[in-house]
Image (cartoon, rainbow, N blue to C red):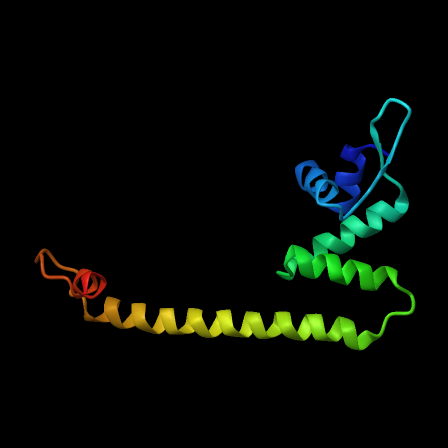
Length: 127
């Protein structure tokens, strides 16, 4: 199947599929006319990559997860370790966002929001 069909079936844009090919995550066959010829296995990989990226896994994590997915002798502990590391990163980002939210909420609460030029938000940002 061509890249348009692969995009439709995998839910990924053709540009993303080309990028994944460029960095070696997928390697579709080539027709006699040099057009990409995606196989069913390529669609499975693309779908896998789309789901992993939607969960925020990095390209390198995706590469490692894909290698483990294709390795029938893999240890699930290896997969779990990658997922646990990513989960810790997400938890750290959530904590950072919550701290940002608290700070910004305090700044918004302290700003009168009226016609006066005095603004604690600008004062804090400029400090």
